[in-house]
Length: 224
Image (cartoon, rainbow, N blue to C red):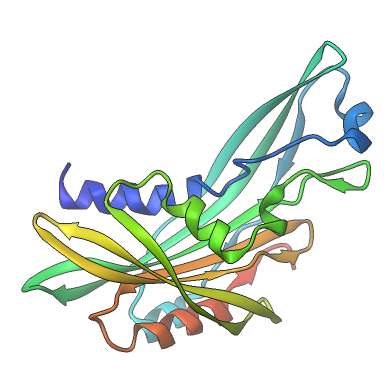
């Protein structure tokens, strides 16, 4: 796999592993999901303004919907739940090990809370930062050895939010392995959505932590 392909795979894996991967039905909402037809939920886009991208050196990689479909079988009846998450991905080029690489990334995931009969089916709102980080790395074979490195508080969408700090070993190009630092925020509820932010960069790069915090603090949500 080429370096560019691996980078894109990392960006997609970082969010695909989070997006409603554990959507579950509980006894209190079983009657609400029986019946005909699919239940559909869509998130509003959460993103970073252009002015912040300019000041931090990040560039937009993509902003796109990320659909997920799950089926539940209750009392012999099967019902689909169709969810459209929104994914915003940003990256930054840097000089590392003598190569110009797309080294740093920042991701914003907006995912519907999926409330049925007063209960939330989406587990993202209850996950710890470590579990969010673990899910993020599950599908990527070039990064391993996740280690906790403390936590801090950062404002995300105007809310004081716990951000877990982690390190991991990553292969960033052929024969080049380095330690990366990850900033993973707890989910913040914005309207009917949960919003999660993630920043990652090699520890060899200076000044990236402040840029990630700036990106987190600047996130906006189209739902208000």
